[in-house]
Image 1: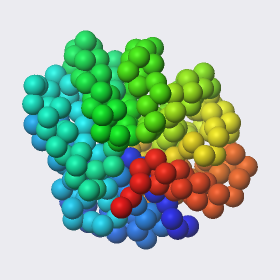
Image 2: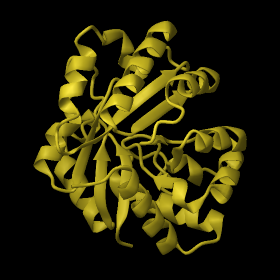
Image 3: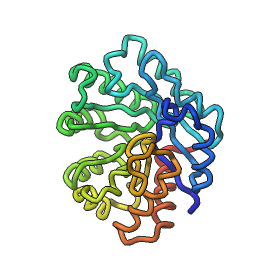
Image 4: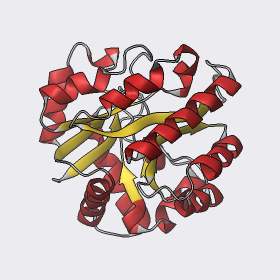
Length: 260
């Protein structure tokens, strides 16, 4: 299998400190040609976690953004700093941004304010966005419909885990649905339905490494090489050749996030 794109991975994670270079080489060996490293890092004031990796590896690109967990660390300088970093030639998107009401590591009203500010920044920059939403669909949609509807650059629903109704609303807002290891889990039946029905030109694949390792790697640290398992399962669910999934998701990514 060749031509895979991992559209969302956290290669800066300390879980890769002992073998980061080896993990990247394993990804190449598994047929991964491009990785999008997510630039959340440990949150403000450091926004460059992914850029540091992208500068070292030609096949790695970056995002910048404030994760909802870290929204409480944002200050008046946040948007100015992100705006400057968006000009870096290997920064393709703003993310991951959004809302997380499961952990509530930052107050919800702060999460919403930081989310909206980054949406405004994304609109002005022309960059697509990568959305994180957990137990917050209603507020996520309310904010997106008010602050993002009609934005021409589109975006990614990272690690999409909703059902058919959430998928319909995401697609109506111009988003791509990115499938992670969860789609390989036997009990994820609603997600399986979405995977079968989603338009081929609006799907992506990702690992969210080091989290959410797919079957048959569950229980292990996830890494970009494992995106191949997600591609295979998506192909099985859709009744399509795996090459179709690999080619379509790579083409979709390049249209959404033009490289070079």
